[in-house]
Length: 186
Image 1 (tube, helix red, strand yellow):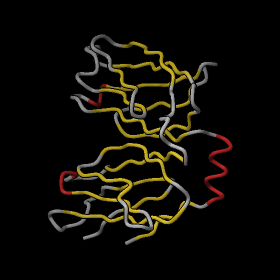
Image 2: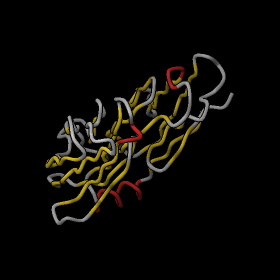
Image 3: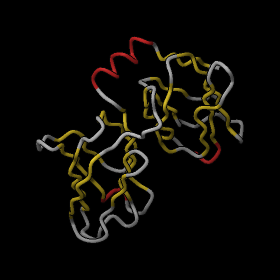
Image 4: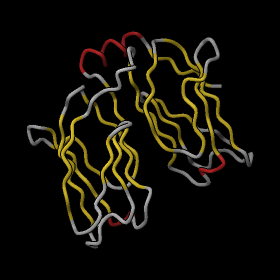
């Protein structure tokens, strides 16, 4: 098991400058190679951009954004969606481009620090799973088959427990949280 340490200095630094590291996921449909997007803040500054995949963004409670969705073929995103945090979701039903305006509001239940996490990037994601447990053995993050999300974590040490049902390792898949990457070898 590899230990994940979230230091008090990191918590204070992040808390002083941002309220949350918010997970962004784009995908879930067909023809991802046609999909691109950009996100601008209320001042018109581009704060994130990409294609299908998993990202994170530093966002404060109440920050407002404009999402510009592009499709190179012109037939919409074919079921792909842009998801930010737990409550924001958008897609392009048809055409070459479209926009969506929204504001991010941090989950009210997080009184510690919210961290974005992601799992994926390799092959055979359906064989993978992991848990993150606190010092008391409580599961604070649990995932099977990849994806992304956020977790509200207090300062402390955490265990990352990784599994592979086939027994040949994670085949290039990586679990990432707070700048730390974890993978399971064969």
